[in-house]
Image (cartoon, rainbow over all chains, first blue to last red; front, side):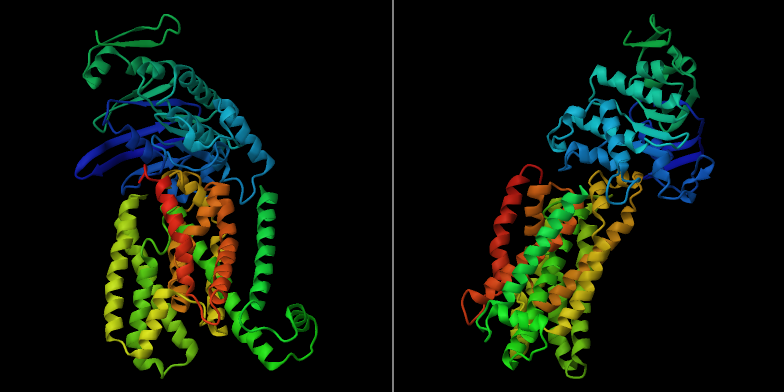
Length: 258
Length: 343
């Protein structure tokens, strides 16, 4: 699905990302974890073709980004960014409709409109659709952009790729789990999601594989049971923790501060 | 959405045509056969109309009305696209110093170019003036953009303050040129600082029509791109919008329009600020609507202002720049009040 070799990123003489190789397959839900400043967002940006650096080689579906047709690419991959412009003087519906921009020239078709409705329904923002975006709270704005990204990938293309940078910020528990369920359902259809997260337990519960970063380097990239061990987590996060089994789901359960 | 936009576009076009026709017949000179008879004679018969009617209709008022329509459309389209690019409703060509930059180059051309003026034909002379204004406009535009924008994010205070800096620099230079210039050059320079459509000729109208109509044709369907750019440039790229290319087009074409317009009419301020402001009250910032409609509204605004400017104190004229500034300043203040917190 995506292959990245020898990824490096230098900013002002410091390695933000240092020599990371990464590959993932169709249908995988991958979480990127790590303490602050580990380079999670930067790495995601490189994978999503936002940052270009000489020598980095990233292939999406065995084809390098520059060789992709710019009109076709947005139908295969989408990205949800961590920071959003808080000032967009438009209605919520119009913002979500931007996700359909790759599909129509001037006038949205019926298909576009129903895709927008579907994703607003999915993310539970239908009651907001006629409100002005600028008047929403932080969490609501966050959900508007999630709906936009989902509507962008609502098509018949197989094996789509979704990048999400901390999608759960500002969200309450209900919506955190709702979003994770939506992503899980998305990956169960043969699509791939690469998600930067902070909550280790949510990652343990939902992710198929976890990439753990520390100071720009790859610590381990494996299934949750292998990554989320007391030894690794205590060392990387520099904070004592205990890992037990979640009594409900049998996933690893991390308890900090013991 | 489609029907809504075409409804507004048709409505505004009809209003524009009515005002244009009215404007031709309003003024100090009265047509001998009366308004409707003259119009009928010109449009539907081959009957000769009397020479003075003919002169006023074809050589004075018609080019002037066309000039007002083109100038209004060009200035307000430039304002709207710049606001989309800078993501701020205050970015209009005059406030960020682009008009001032092109006035400076026009002034230099007038004063220094006076020596070679007699050697070259009129069309070339105008083209030289507009080319120089364009150079001035695009230089200030790139300067202002580089000053105020870091990694795709514009600092609005720096944007407006660099406009102030450029305006005062060109004010000083224009002042110096005024001091050095001869009588005829002085009259030309004064005309620039006040702005007027009185010098409209068919040559100017033709050049302006080529520039403005080409720019409109290229920019009018950028509504989607400008909407997406409100998300941020990276997110717009993820939606398949060619951000860099769109920005280059906007810089180039708005400088071209502002430069040409300044060369022919002087500084007619605030049009690029007033028109998008009014449209935003109705359509929010949806560029799908405000981009095409701003050209029509700009034409209407400038045509009305020009008609008022030449009929208010007959037989003399109030410079149109004064009228648009009277309208523009309150709009400027209204936007400032609205954005007090976010600036």
